[in-house]
Length: 481
Picture 1 (cartoon, rainbow, N blue to C red):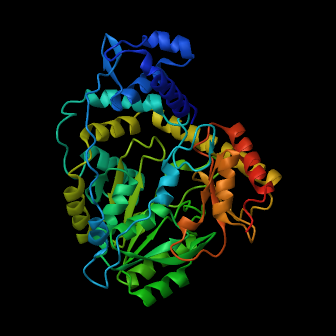
Picture 2: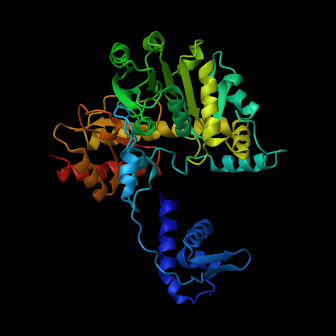
Picture 3: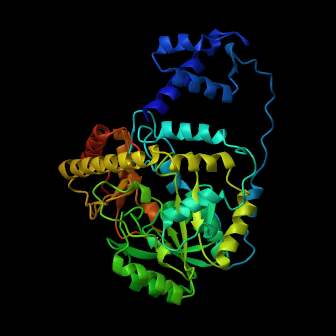
């Protein structure tokens, strides 16, 4: 948050001062800007790059930065796009689910909050937790590999597919793994491959808003199946299959988003068997296996590892444990479904860029990788404990039914009568961004909730301060209906 803020602040100051220079005039050197504004060379470089992208300055290697000469332009007449409302809403058949998508639940975890606001909304590791040096070194080594910039195999590099297969375990082989471009892209491919437009798809309730957005974008109809602290409830899952005729169920069996639940051992085989009896697939989104906390016990294997019949389609990614820009994932499946997945992925994306795949291999094979995983395992536990303690001390009104041993957030139930939207707005005014619970439900929620992330902040002191600010928002009474 601090680095993004300083870059934005410097860019704003330079933007205001551009009028001091004539078009084509040279700006002070990077060294002079570092000294004048007391920022790092990286901040100066990124601020100038931002202004260059806006067409305000021109940078010339070895010469410096110059105010751009902007050509005179005549404003183009405004067009009439009202026709698109008809085109985008006319689905042509009454039984097709409209494909309009509300991306707000996803944007909350992707967008940076305003300067000075503590980020309890983030879905990725704070920059200080990301293995930046290891990623940089891996990418540099990858770029020197023979053929690194050539076209990769369409299914992914054989060595990377083999690595993912070993990570998944069980009887999964490299031949049953496809390399994809991040978890969200892999899930999109799976939805499109396994269910036709207009079909129902069973989803956990609550669930990740991006899951609901993917389903609706594909023209599918999400049907909620409640979860409890032991994961999805098998009896209700069976009822949902019978009532809807669905042929697809998507779940997060490990540290579910947002509840943090782990599918209980006595439910795992039952869930797969229920889907098999319904002639349905299970999409297993194994999104945070690498964000296990230090105090967690042995983790259960992925569902796909114990599924010889091809019921489970497994999705996992390196992104959550590394960087939001390191978008490398795996899809594991068996039988004709694998060929369907492969065909759709090729049509949609061709392939994942080879340098990124080579970098993933370099990273996974380096001593820095297990060190990084151990480091974030300890740090996430520390942050979880700090947030839990702060909430219990300062906000006992918020119920915390489950403390997860993995992942990056807590799921809290609000007191009866609390308005999520009003509380979210009041919290933002108090200087802390939180995620309301409503977007996590595909139908009416049973109660008000909020999700608080502890991974995207700078450290435990910021967690404590964020909870204090949230207390202020509550004391104002802005969250009460």
